[in-house]
Length: 197
Image (cartoon, rainbow, N blue to C red; front, side, top):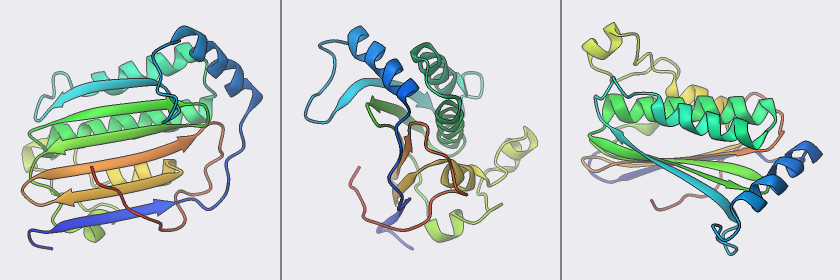
Protein backbone atom coordinates (compact mmCIF):
# COMPACT_ATOMS: atom_id res chain seq x y z
CA UNK A 1 0.00 0.00 0.00
CA UNK A 2 1.35 3.45 -0.75
CA UNK A 3 0.07 6.64 0.81
CA UNK A 4 -3.57 5.71 1.57
CA UNK A 5 -5.30 4.43 4.65
CA UNK A 6 -5.21 0.73 5.45
CA UNK A 7 -7.85 -0.78 7.71
CA UNK A 8 -7.93 -4.19 9.36
CA UNK A 9 -10.76 -5.28 11.61
CA UNK A 10 -11.63 -8.55 13.35
CA UNK A 11 -14.33 -9.53 15.83
CA UNK A 12 -15.47 -12.60 17.76
CA UNK A 13 -18.97 -13.72 16.83
CA UNK A 14 -20.01 -15.04 20.25
CA UNK A 15 -21.70 -12.89 22.89
CA UNK A 16 -19.61 -12.62 26.04
CA UNK A 17 -20.90 -13.92 29.36
CA UNK A 18 -20.56 -11.63 32.36
CA UNK A 19 -19.23 -13.04 35.60
CA UNK A 20 -20.95 -12.08 38.90
CA UNK A 21 -17.47 -11.46 40.33
CA UNK A 22 -16.87 -8.89 37.62
CA UNK A 23 -20.15 -7.18 38.44
CA UNK A 24 -19.10 -6.94 42.08
CA UNK A 25 -15.79 -5.33 41.07
CA UNK A 26 -17.52 -2.94 38.71
CA UNK A 27 -20.06 -1.99 41.34
CA UNK A 28 -17.13 -0.94 43.50
CA UNK A 29 -15.66 0.89 40.52
CA UNK A 30 -18.85 2.83 39.87
CA UNK A 31 -18.93 3.98 43.51
CA UNK A 32 -15.29 5.05 43.38
CA UNK A 33 -15.61 7.13 40.20
CA UNK A 34 -19.09 8.61 40.68
CA UNK A 35 -19.38 11.68 38.49
CA UNK A 36 -16.38 10.70 36.36
CA UNK A 37 -18.07 8.56 33.75
CA UNK A 38 -19.80 9.25 30.45
CA UNK A 39 -23.27 7.72 30.60
CA UNK A 40 -23.81 7.94 26.82
CA UNK A 41 -20.66 5.96 26.08
CA UNK A 42 -20.98 3.77 29.17
CA UNK A 43 -17.35 4.41 30.13
CA UNK A 44 -16.90 4.22 33.90
CA UNK A 45 -13.19 4.94 33.97
CA UNK A 46 -10.61 5.99 31.41
CA UNK A 47 -6.87 5.59 31.89
CA UNK A 48 -4.59 7.47 29.48
CA UNK A 49 -0.82 7.50 29.20
CA UNK A 50 1.70 9.20 26.93
CA UNK A 51 4.26 6.92 25.33
CA UNK A 52 7.46 8.23 23.73
CA UNK A 53 9.17 6.57 20.81
CA UNK A 54 12.54 4.91 21.54
CA UNK A 55 12.15 5.61 25.28
CA UNK A 56 13.19 2.15 26.49
CA UNK A 57 13.91 3.46 30.01
CA UNK A 58 10.18 4.05 30.56
CA UNK A 59 8.90 1.33 28.24
CA UNK A 60 6.28 -0.82 29.94
CA UNK A 61 5.39 1.70 32.65
CA UNK A 62 1.98 2.58 31.19
CA UNK A 63 0.92 -1.06 30.85
CA UNK A 64 2.18 -1.79 34.37
CA UNK A 65 0.03 1.07 35.72
CA UNK A 66 -3.00 -0.27 33.85
CA UNK A 67 -2.44 -3.76 35.27
CA UNK A 68 -2.10 -2.43 38.83
CA UNK A 69 -5.28 -0.36 38.50
CA UNK A 70 -7.22 -3.35 37.18
CA UNK A 71 -5.89 -5.50 40.04
CA UNK A 72 -7.22 -2.89 42.48
CA UNK A 73 -10.63 -3.25 40.87
CA UNK A 74 -10.55 -7.01 41.46
CA UNK A 75 -11.04 -8.10 37.86
CA UNK A 76 -10.94 -11.78 36.97
CA UNK A 77 -7.52 -13.22 36.09
CA UNK A 78 -8.41 -14.01 32.44
CA UNK A 79 -9.43 -10.44 31.70
CA UNK A 80 -6.52 -9.00 33.68
CA UNK A 81 -3.94 -11.12 31.88
CA UNK A 82 -5.38 -10.40 28.43
CA UNK A 83 -5.57 -6.64 28.98
CA UNK A 84 -2.09 -6.47 30.54
CA UNK A 85 -0.47 -8.31 27.63
CA UNK A 86 -2.36 -6.31 24.99
CA UNK A 87 -1.40 -3.03 26.68
CA UNK A 88 2.26 -4.05 26.94
CA UNK A 89 2.45 -5.19 23.31
CA UNK A 90 0.73 -2.02 22.05
CA UNK A 91 2.91 0.21 24.24
CA UNK A 92 6.13 -1.47 23.10
CA UNK A 93 5.03 -1.17 19.49
CA UNK A 94 4.74 2.61 19.96
CA UNK A 95 8.14 2.74 21.68
CA UNK A 96 9.80 0.74 18.88
CA UNK A 97 8.11 2.16 15.78
CA UNK A 98 6.58 5.59 16.45
CA UNK A 99 7.71 9.07 17.43
CA UNK A 100 5.07 9.29 20.16
CA UNK A 101 1.68 7.96 21.06
CA UNK A 102 -1.01 7.42 23.65
CA UNK A 103 -2.29 4.31 25.37
CA UNK A 104 -5.95 4.75 26.34
CA UNK A 105 -7.93 2.18 28.34
CA UNK A 106 -11.69 2.58 28.64
CA UNK A 107 -13.34 0.46 31.33
CA UNK A 108 -17.08 -0.07 31.31
CA UNK A 109 -19.57 -2.59 32.68
CA UNK A 110 -19.06 -5.29 30.02
CA UNK A 111 -15.61 -4.78 28.53
CA UNK A 112 -12.28 -3.02 28.46
CA UNK A 113 -11.26 -1.24 25.27
CA UNK A 114 -7.57 -0.59 24.68
CA UNK A 115 -6.64 2.09 22.15
CA UNK A 116 -3.06 2.74 21.07
CA UNK A 117 -2.69 5.79 18.82
CA UNK A 118 0.63 6.91 17.49
CA UNK A 119 2.28 9.48 15.32
CA UNK A 120 4.84 7.72 13.21
CA UNK A 121 5.61 6.10 9.86
CA UNK A 122 2.44 3.97 9.80
CA UNK A 123 2.21 0.39 8.60
CA UNK A 124 2.97 -0.06 4.93
CA UNK A 125 1.36 -3.50 4.56
CA UNK A 126 -1.14 -4.48 7.27
CA UNK A 127 -1.77 -7.94 5.84
CA UNK A 128 1.94 -8.71 6.03
CA UNK A 129 2.24 -7.13 9.48
CA UNK A 130 -0.46 -9.54 10.73
CA UNK A 131 1.74 -12.53 9.87
CA UNK A 132 3.61 -14.29 12.70
CA UNK A 133 7.25 -13.22 12.87
CA UNK A 134 7.03 -10.27 10.47
CA UNK A 135 8.90 -7.28 11.90
CA UNK A 136 10.23 -3.96 10.71
CA UNK A 137 12.04 -3.28 14.00
CA UNK A 138 15.57 -1.91 13.56
CA UNK A 139 18.48 -4.25 14.29
CA UNK A 140 19.50 -2.41 17.49
CA UNK A 141 15.98 -2.96 18.87
CA UNK A 142 16.10 -6.67 18.01
CA UNK A 143 19.46 -6.94 19.78
CA UNK A 144 17.70 -5.73 22.94
CA UNK A 145 15.24 -8.61 22.61
CA UNK A 146 12.30 -6.68 21.15
CA UNK A 147 10.78 -6.62 17.67
CA UNK A 148 10.22 -10.36 17.19
CA UNK A 149 7.14 -9.72 15.06
CA UNK A 150 4.57 -11.17 17.46
CA UNK A 151 2.79 -7.99 18.65
CA UNK A 152 -0.25 -8.22 16.40
CA UNK A 153 -0.33 -12.02 16.68
CA UNK A 154 -0.43 -11.80 20.49
CA UNK A 155 -3.04 -9.04 20.50
CA UNK A 156 -5.20 -10.90 17.98
CA UNK A 157 -4.99 -14.06 20.10
CA UNK A 158 -6.04 -12.31 23.32
CA UNK A 159 -8.62 -9.78 22.11
CA UNK A 160 -12.29 -10.43 21.52
CA UNK A 161 -12.15 -7.82 18.77
CA UNK A 162 -9.35 -5.96 17.04
CA UNK A 163 -9.37 -2.96 14.71
CA UNK A 164 -6.26 -1.53 13.12
CA UNK A 165 -6.00 1.55 10.94
CA UNK A 166 -2.79 2.99 9.59
CA UNK A 167 -1.85 5.83 7.26
CA UNK A 168 1.67 5.82 5.90
CA UNK A 169 3.65 8.85 7.04
CA UNK A 170 1.08 9.75 9.71
CA UNK A 171 0.59 6.91 12.17
CA UNK A 172 -1.46 4.00 13.39
CA UNK A 173 -4.49 3.46 15.62
CA UNK A 174 -5.13 0.06 17.17
CA UNK A 175 -8.29 -0.76 19.15
CA UNK A 176 -8.69 -4.04 20.99
CA UNK A 177 -11.64 -5.10 23.13
CA UNK A 178 -11.61 -7.67 25.93
CA UNK A 179 -14.90 -8.75 27.52
CA UNK A 180 -14.87 -9.58 31.23
CA UNK A 181 -14.39 -13.27 31.97
CA UNK A 182 -14.77 -14.19 28.32
CA UNK A 183 -12.73 -17.31 27.57
CA UNK A 184 -10.39 -16.91 24.62
CA UNK A 185 -11.00 -19.41 21.84
CA UNK A 186 -7.80 -19.03 19.87
CA UNK A 187 -8.27 -15.35 19.15
CA UNK A 188 -10.44 -13.23 16.93
CA UNK A 189 -12.53 -15.22 14.47
CA UNK A 190 -14.23 -12.96 11.91
CA UNK A 191 -13.97 -9.57 10.21
CA UNK A 192 -16.41 -6.71 10.72
CA UNK A 193 -16.44 -2.94 10.32
CA UNK A 194 -13.85 -0.23 10.65
CA UNK A 195 -13.31 2.97 12.58
CA UNK A 196 -11.73 6.37 12.20
CA UNK A 197 -9.09 7.30 14.76
